[in-house]
Length: 418
Image (tube, rainbow, N blue to C red; front, side, top):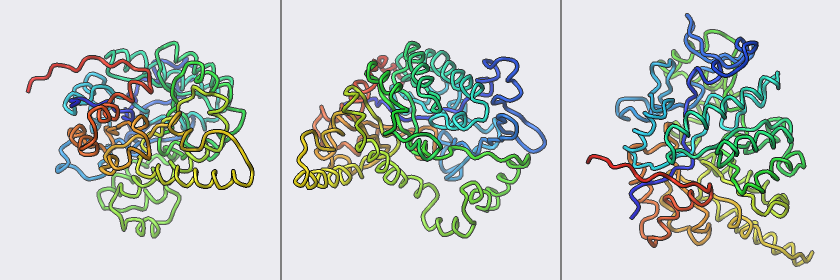
């Protein structure tokens, strides 16, 4: 039985010097920078954007859960655990969790770089994307070979630029790229548009993976030009007042209170089925996999329990339509099993759905340090989900599929003192 997992969806918090150390001097006053003043601590980007730590879903995973709120969100850098931004501390936390390797998504930049995709100054935005990629690959991934899977961001506004940056980060060791779950919802062409062909061609030739993280089709972090944002949010948390959260979500406080019929985080966890099914449908409706037969797509943090229902309905409808309009070719479920992969944090129903999803199409994730994580018990929770399956199938899900999908060779498990 495997004693270590590979997570294909973790997160990190970019340290303040990622951009200030790398951007040209003329952008130091407009690029991402960390400020601390009488109104609190926050990121500034371009002229007025303030992105407080709280808006980044950082969670408080490595604090004992009994000593923190369920949805703990740091509001100052001193409250952020080093494992969120320091690779040495992260590896120590991974060892505690029996996590052999991790693929990490950015937070402040947005899971697919949405902050920079929406920037006014596209020259600055491209430099910010490149700076993040260089930091993650050169300083995070390279610090502990075999413990982190390299992944890059690309600019969405120009297909040729996206392809060029993909080639650059692949040369530096990236095994995947993070793309939007729904680019058409954030001002860019749909995945069915030829706009993406240069990027898809690069990934097809490299036989590497595209990762679509839950929420990457939304504005990952809302900007607020008022200087007292963090002060208001701290007071809101203290007083259990959801008005500021409602404002960020673009809904009324009354609607937010109605949504609280479920516990905090529950509705968010259900977004995987809603957004994941829509994204999967977009890709199945495209001809991308026919034109790019080596393309691989990972549905990051979207869960897996809903997948059989979507595939069953898609197959049935396609079969029905083919009786009226004869057509050769694979069914949607065939395309899925050849090209698309789902991931779960903790779904005990997984073991019952292996035949419908495919043993080769499921991977695991810890979501550390976000509040959905099972740290430091991720291995135990994953084992609950694969209990009763043959040993070879368990191995695929726990780590084998991740090694294959990302063409990744992990390091040997560290020797730990019991």
